[in-house]
Image 1 (cartoon, rainbow, N blue to C red):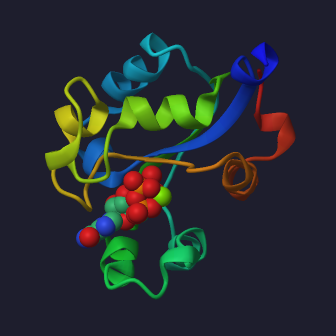
Image 2 (image 1 turned 180 degrees about the vertical axis):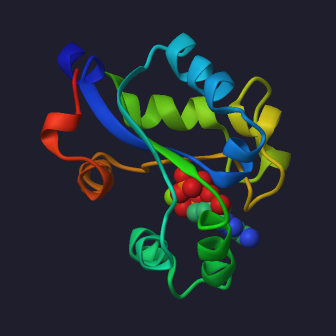
Length: 145
Ligand code: RTP
Ligand code: MG
C-alpha cells in the first residue's frame, strides 16, 4: 500500500573521524539534504572507548572490532538524526556500500571514504536499530522535526 512506501522515518547517522578530520561535515550534510533527508538533531562529540564498544557491540566477535573502535575514537564524530521518507534505506543509498571500492557513483563513500574502515559515515541498518541508536545519542527534546 501507498502509505507503506511513504513512511516518514528517522535514522541515526554518524560522520566518522576520517571525515571530520578533513572538514567534510558540511559537504556530507549537503548530500543528505539534497537527497531528501532533513537533519533534525546533530551533535559533535568524541566517543570514549566504552561508548564505541557499546555502540558496536553487535560486531564484538568480528576480526575488525578492535580496530573499528580505535578508529571511531581517534577524533571527533558528528552524530545526527536524519528524517524523511524511508529514511533508513534512503540514507544507506546516499552513503553507498561499506567498501568504497564497491560503492556506486555519486555516493558519500565513493566520493569521500578512505578505506573499508575509514568510510566517512555510519547509518542505521533497520528501523529497530535506528530507534536504539538514536536513543544512544539523543533525548527526545534534542530532536526537532
Ligand atoms: P555502518 O554500520 O558504519 O553504517 O556500516 P555498514 O553497515 O555498511 O558496515 P558494517 O558491516 O555494519 O560494519 C561497521 C563498520 O565497521 C567497519 N568495517 N571494517 N575491515 C573490515 O573488513 C571492516 N568491515 C567493516 C566499517 O567502518 C563499517 O562501516
Ligand atoms: Mg552497520
